[in-house]
Image 1 (tube, rainbow, N blue to C red):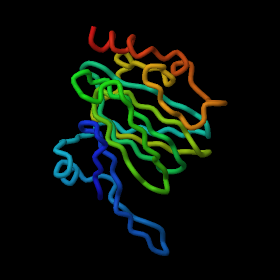
Image 2 (tube, rainbow, N blue to C red):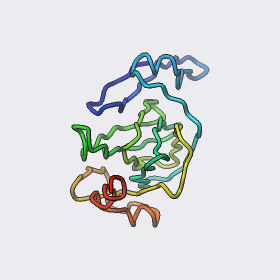
Image 3 (cartoon, one colour):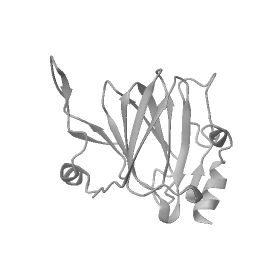
Image 4 (cartoon, helix red, strand yellow):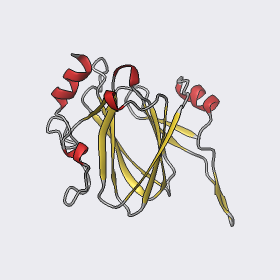
Length: 184
């Protein structure tokens, strides 16, 4: 397993060692001991979520705040996404910046997203299965949605025409509104 630094504190891109033969493939998706050794982070996951989406679905940019904040380990089982995080940790030099990585069932990359980042993804292939482990339980009262097209952040999404968004994602808040709710 290779742990790749992203330039954002505690945000890690993980590339597994995949063993393939005529039967298919095998890889270790997560190993707490190896993760801590490589990153210094002791991750304990308490909730596992999965979504199935069609091409051009955009989910995000979501985050939980306060005591309900969540770190996530995200992974694609089938299909392909552009996975995006926005750093909303005001004490970090990467505050207000975003990081994007292509995750797919083919490359089997994972992204570890620390607490304090908004997270979302755009589906790039039909029938994409997305899974993520969380280190805290979901609390709907602590959830915020940052605008996926916030003009201050300027995320470069690959396909903006014909996007499929939920009502919640269409009503995402501007960066300044999210920061007021996070920090007062």
